[in-house]
Length: 118
Image (cartoon, rainbow, N blue to C red; front, side, top):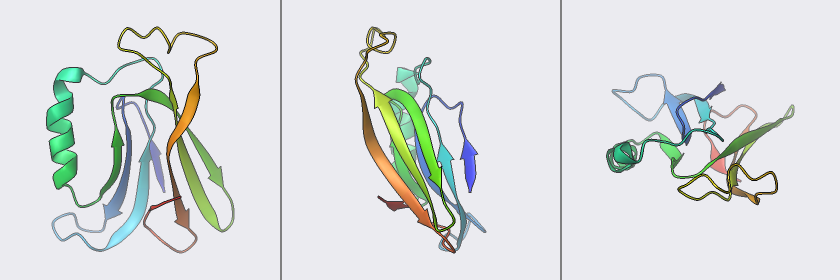
């Protein structure tokens, strides 16, 4: 498992033993998004296009902000991406009572190296 962040976007990747020859995943990477900083809108179209071509990318969300919850047990690692109801002007992100929802959740079961939708 690899848990990272600071990309101002949420991602899930299967990490390959050799990215030139995908199909042999060795771990999963969860990238947590930012709650205060936005992903640069000008980079979004190219980022989506690259992610769609990437066979090891399982999830991408760079248009919403939030946080990540990981629940780790002996048998599984579960990650939920919780996103704040946000608007382009950040109004809702800054509101203490802003609505939050789980937009995606994944599980990696013991002995496995790939993320599955939960």
